[in-house]
Image 1: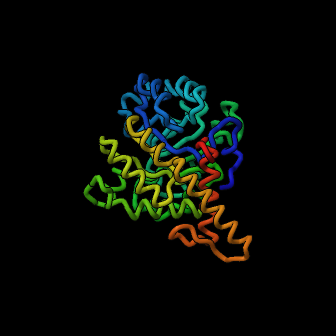
Image 2: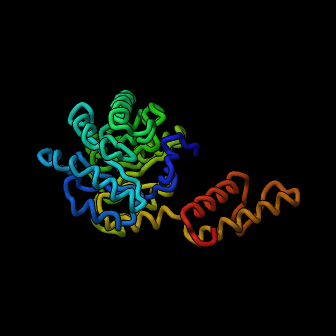
Image 3: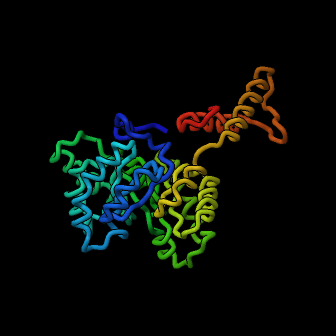
Length: 304
């Protein structure tokens, strides 16, 4: 993945290794303050669904203090604002003073919404003496219309470093009953990841919105099988399971090294492929193994 200047802000965790994105009630000071210990790579002060409208002014006033605390703990500080068509501009005018690393916006269905968000953020960066390009954008796609335009949304601004999927709003838009198995969301999840990959931005899988940790882990594993390396959460109790799934294990790293060694030995012997157990290793599999080892090293996995 190629990083833009916004993605390479000194000291900021790179997008490709932001595994768990945790949403937090925007006006709940205690939850916001304690979240630094959750293990999430990205913490999100949520100003939409998790903050009642009457408490949004209170939430906005907390932003600067909270973002500073999160960054001091080595965590990427994010905020999700309402659409600009509703309270988004009021959200931005307040929270941008706290210099969020990422601004997410809910209910994005058109590239033009991202273009308008970018314009607002640029103006506020100038007003508050924030370095140009400091603020990343992460559109939150929550409708069938948005899914159909994921690639265009992801490419609508150089500031877009991630696109996030949705659970409840997406199912509601599809008119589909919610289930723990999330069958109703399968196509939307697959398409969002595919289009983000084509656009060269991080895809963030939708949150598991039931309470059980085992179900969250199973849902995260399904997302990982689709190709996701990041997932959002609405429960701090789910963070450890998501991180576990989205981090290569020591066994996976050992297997990847064995694949690399076998393929390189085969090539040195003039063969087109290698065999490792029942696996026929060709070029794509070899490069996948090398990417896994590199990712494991970035995440500090032993043996990588």
